[in-house]
Image (cartoon, rainbow, N blue to C red):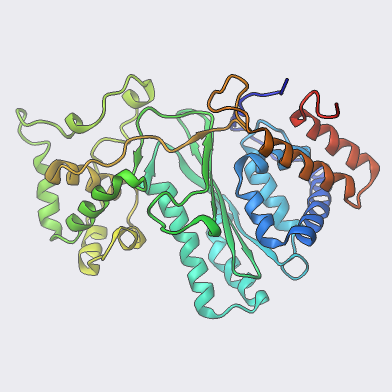
Length: 377
């Protein structure tokens, strides 16, 4: 029988003690050395873009398996453990104020890799768009506070970012990888994981939101005064139907108490004026305009539905954080092949790592929780 369960990510205060981070950095470096040497940098960041492998990796490094801090600490450890020159991978950005340094980190890494200025600018744009999409185009009540951007010397990239919900006191992690992104505004993430799935969430990057995206762009290209009149007219006459009429009904208490899916009270009209002057050709260009955030995205989406009848997608795109499925088939059957493969890779990496026996034993003990009871039979 497999050991299965759900990984909740409660928000924990404090920070990892130095005695632990030193050992985590040492172990992370050795595992990275082996994986990059055997599989290459692209395969390495693809593994990190798998949220369940990432969670298991954090467990192997001996960090709190159920904490939201796994995201911030593991990416921070990798930033210190990986050398662009030695490993061919650079980790840019991080938590809080450090995330704002991502553009300068990308520029510094690009110089070490010998990238052209055009390539550096492109990577900086990708980093910006990943944050814009997860913070504004998907609205489920999670505010981004962590953004890590990984680059390889082969110009491949991955994004690991996390949002926090003050209402739930829980975190939601977003994973991107360059190999799987064909369009920044059509389901670009490799995965989104959280232990809470909202009954209603605005998802403007769903395939089903294509018409709503086009309608939003058409609206944004109209004179700002016209949009202002449309929005204001929805709340004036008492007998007029509210925009709430078009929103799906929900019994979720979170939806009843949080007004994040209503028409925003304050819209930055200066931003909409810039959008009008810019005349975006598509939804990606609309999102890329400085100042376009959740309120602007939501306001345009709701008016587009009211005026054009083009409904955005209201299904939360999150995946529950079951590592390999549940034994009862919830949320999906156990993927034994994927589970066995991850176990083997992690176990072999630890066993072959050039580290002390004490650290190796501790890591294997941490990994054991993922191993089936009959794994050695």
